[in-house]
Every structure is written in C-alpha cells, then in structure tokens.
Image 1 (tube, rainbow, N blue to C red):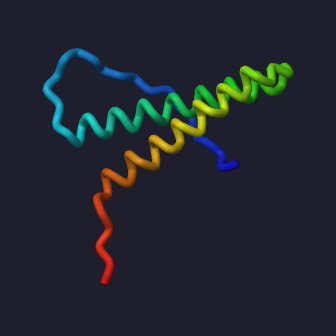
Image 2 (spheres, rainbow, N blue to C red; image 1 turned 45 degrees about the horizontal axis):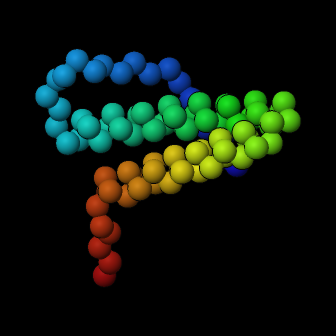
Length: 82
C-alpha cells in the first residue's frame, strides 16, 4: 500500500468567487483529507477487530482514491499520442 502523507488543512468557505481551477484545487485538497481520515479509521477498525466496519471504510477509501485519480486525469486533460 502506498504511504499517505496527511496534513492539517484549513478550508475557507466564505462564499468567495472561485475560478474552475480554484474549485478543482479545493476539491482535490478535500479528497486528500478524506482519504487520510478514512485510512486512519480503517486501520483503527482493523486493530480493534471491527471487520464489517473496516470493510465499509475500505470501500469508501478505495472510492476516494479513485475520485482522486479521476480528478488528476481531468486536470491533465486528454493525453495526445503521436
């Protein structure tokens, strides 16, 4: 499993006008925080023998990782070959 680098993040939700790039950045940051917290929670569930809860957290973790990959793909746009 890849090691995650989790850090504290401050979100500013004051109704500012944001560009698409700002929204994408904030969404990516939020997904990063979510992935880190889910990873911590699923490890805690596993350590405490909470198998079904760990399974549900694992599903959410994997979906969050997929969402990050989709965000990164969209940010880079379609790749051109040739």
